[in-house]
Length: 160
Image (cartoon, rainbow, N blue to C red; front, side):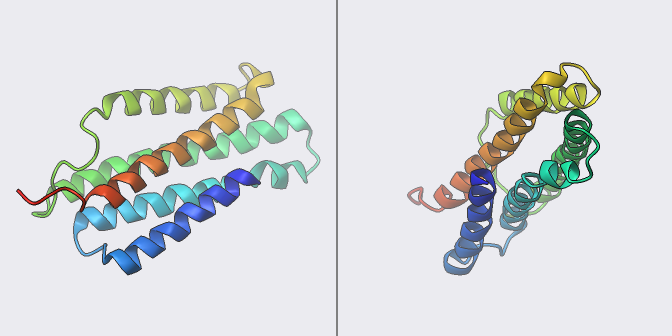
């Protein structure tokens, strides 16, 4: 439940930043805001999916595997959307390299978590299902934290 509250908070703070910070005019701002909303609302939704699937009374392991498969698929969709969205934002004149330059480690860890999600959903190491699910939820919230920090700090550099 706490993860759902944090995810909802990210979505709410993004709205506050948009309204009071006058963000969202350029392609870069729209991309970042959409990413935070998509990721945080996805975490909010998927934090409840295991309970909803378990209500079908198909067994604990089967419930976790179904929830993990759905969540892993969503995770892949978010990554794919992010890559396409960043490429689109790069073509706009207001885009500058604003995300951390060393995104390779973030990408590598994210890919490892996605592969771990699919492996566990497929039945490998079923005893790790709740851990893998929680790890993926926290990973996406971590990405929201980084991107939200970039959004907040982006206007704080002194003019050159």
